[in-house]
Image (cartoon, rainbow, N blue to C red; front, side, top):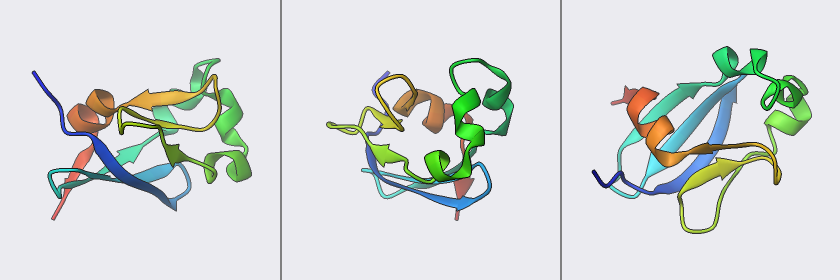
Length: 82
């Protein structure tokens, strides 16, 4: 299945992302459950968390070369915003 690509991302609360996809839908994604995993633990630093950006091509949101979340994870597990 093809998932929509990410058009934009912004932080809207502590550890919440608002992700807009190229099909004009928006989803809210809570990063909190991931923070217990070693890969995502650095995001407990709020300044780092707020530095999120869309990866080239819209296939993920990224913080640095080690931390990212794919478009399908954000699409499948994000809460639709209406």
